[in-house]
Image 1 (tube, one colour):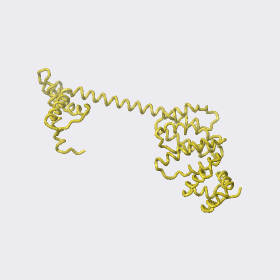
Image 2 (cartoon, one colour):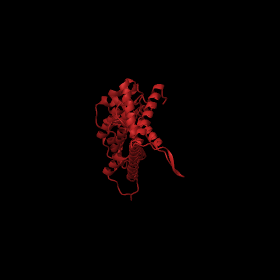
Image 3 (cartoon, one colour):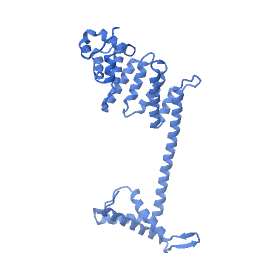
Image 4 (spheres, helix red, strand yellow):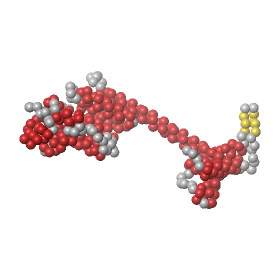
Length: 314
């Protein structure tokens, strides 16, 4: 920060007034103590120390007092500023002690907060590992305890929780769909923590689990994908059109109207990844989509031909 001449003059006046206040404090007992040597290794600074404390107090009082001071507002405002600086200088020792006490208290609070967060984060991380561990000898973790630990953990551990649950789902949904339900309380806790509705991926990941688990929960999966789409659109984020593709699959199973399903597919078609999934549907992943298009072929014939969909026979 570069001070202009007016600011520099103001702080010189405040500093001088503070030193004068410190000088007054030094002669409050009607005597002036000059700097002198007390012993070979000890010097008594006398009134110089009072002036230096006054300098600090004159400046600190403007930091501690609420309100604004305008040196250019007129002579009376200027006098008030000088008077406040003198008072601050007179109480310089007390102000410095108060300021240091406040700073140490804040530092102690910050340290305690960090220690608490580290403790909570470590506890949550251990529970996550235990919950997702395939070791049969590992005692199960209650969903309530797991959710509470995630909610109390710092943001960094919440991000780790999302990554761990997402990777666990990706590794197991094809060959071990019975395992992926373990991630449900993790995503539910992250959704509960997101009170401002910023993170659509929590809802999408939960929906994928609900869709792929045995048995599937198509209704709730569709609701979570709808929530994910709404948050994504509200935050103007591009991509993530797998949401519409998977919601279309959910809606097929839930017997939604043809136009609702087709609308989701139309949203997903322009994007390379989801467009390829629709144009070349795989029986293993999109068997319901293939069956739906075959069942409604008369109504969808023009749409299928227009989008060059390679529709396999059932």
